[in-house]
Amino acid sequence: MILVLNAGSSSLKAELFDTALISVATAAVTEIGSRGELRCNATRSPAKAADHDAALSLILAALDDAGHPLDRLTACAHRVVHGGADLTAPARLTVDVIAQITACIPLAPLHNPANLAGISAMAHLMPGLAQCASFDTAFHATNPDVASTYALPATEQAKGLRRYGFHGLSYAGLIRAIDPLPARLLAFHLGNGASLCAIHHGRSVATSMGYSPLDGLVMGSRTGSIDGMAVLRLAQDHGIDGASALLNRQSGLTALAGTNDMATILARDDAQARFAVDHFCYWAIRHAGSAVAAMGGLDAIAFTGGIGENAAPVRDAITAGLAFLGPVPVHIIAADEERQIARDALALLGTRVA
Image: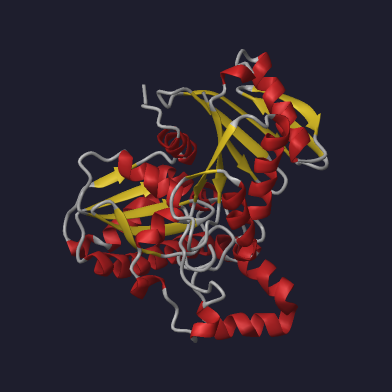
């Protein structure tokens, strides 16, 4: 059995897979450090966890109570948001790999520390269990230098300032769900975070997110692409922290429609909501044109993520905006990063999928 952990700053989510990659249980602890909740499969109960160690203890106990004893675990596999320029494939967690993940904290200060907390918690509670990590940035390591390099002085590039791209685990899982895989696939991961990826013969050659998940498409609460001088103006007016909060948590659909919930926006019939949807789709189409150019044409489109899977009017508007490229198949794929992480772990352990 493979236990997949996704550790956030105040939450810990887990999913248990067998060697056939069938999900057999889910569990989560919310609001770590305050009054929270433990969920295991369909049951919920109040639970307080002071830290990730305590949260993981609750999850492991709940799984054991649900008939999944810990001695059946083969490995624990973690989602790690940022692997930097060096961690470009799934990896067994060693002292050196953990040090590399730690070195990437300046690139993902909100995410990597939480991911490391989950890794540390499992090492404390089950020190003999093999641990693996899959990286959200790794899928885009195949982008050519011309796509990933910012036109900055070498001294600044040396600080790690380059395009990395994100949602890589979603895209890695998506391409396994399309058979046969088209040579030139335009993939959209549309949710509260939104991005697109040009996938040429199964490899990412361009993606809309950059140094951080802020760049690219309009999102639930992020601006998407914005002029650097506008960012400097916001920093001048609001300070660095204030500008960061505004760009990442107060913008996007939240700013345009008053909510980041696309289903709520689509259900409304007012000018503000219609403009928010039009804006979201317009910029998805604009960025899509760039991605199609990067792979020299288009053979198919795929949508995943909460909006991509469930918001037919958004999909229809985007595909209509790209109709000038000619008719192509459109795939709707359920996002399943956890299963991809489990698949990576089984491959690292040399275990055949049953």
